[in-house]
Length: 135
Image: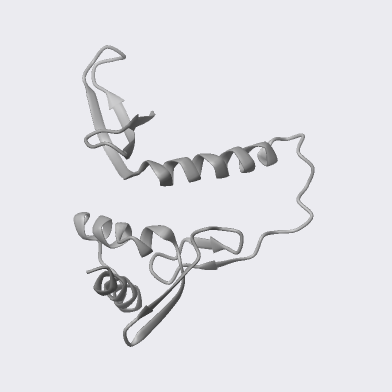
């Protein structure tokens, strides 16, 4: 089951967690996975879902055109032309264009380091260049 917890452990941060209960519905809650992000990002995601979900229903008319996107060079998430996430950073020897907000604010690199996730050389160069600008 998914659970959203606003503002723990600090104000302005929300947690989306995949949980399960041990020994039935009254058992202890076990967090299998969690993602903590600033509340503003959750709010933006919620607004996008409100726009997208009605288009997924069986009675929805077929889309007559697809919105163009490019992959974020730091995490490969799609960055849409209409998204407020598209950003330009002049980062030393590697000019970066079209980064998603999570890469721009350093969240992607922190999350990958916390999870000890291996990165390909290009992705590492992009995320470390962004981190250098943030310091």
